[in-house]
Image (cartoon, rainbow, N blue to C red; front, side, top):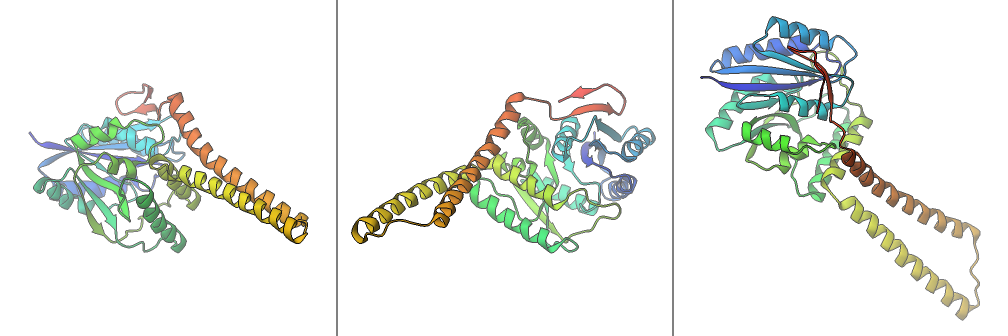
Length: 319
């Protein structure tokens, strides 16, 4: 009996890419991976174009290989990824983006490496960021440096979500069922023996990216908050430092007034101090609020996603 490889593909407004992706993957599976059965799980994350229609068509044309899940609205890539992993039934599970920036041609090498060595996961890492805005590349590199410094996980600079995992590792990832998900961190947190294949950046073949700079920035903040308490420690340190400075300033002005008969004056300096301390307080409250907000969402235990439609049934599913 052949081993099965499940391919999980989150999609949001990817109408131009789905058929191109499936054609490219079919060529790779038929030419280099004939000894495996394949299962494609497309997850429609509330797209507003013809993404779902194309998924339906592929599923009808290839019922033994292609499955799809369609959310009732846009829940985000993390929810789509989690839904796809839960639906996957393969012995090995692959996570890929549909834009072909994750080269399908690497898959045979990834599978061979996974099976020939004692690895539980083989991921991919971009060595270049050609075609990406310089400011995005700069902040991405700084993010990897920062999160590796302030957390107990390690995320390789340039690492993609594109990876193949064993069934055991996939089940461990699914066991982390938190609402606020940061998959790159979860892949690292669960452990397991992981290696990476390097490749040069590949630009998408059609369509445009759905990730804005602001979206990536918020996603980065979520990753830091999910895996580190350092921002809270920084907030506490700033508060303590400000308190010590205020005590020293009080002593200084008191001594100056008593010994040198130089009364403290200066409305401007007073306002600077007040506004400075107020800004620090609001900054600290903002950090604390971010963590409290995450706790609030976790405590409500809302489902990560709602499935409105899936291949073979029209039943609604919550998870």
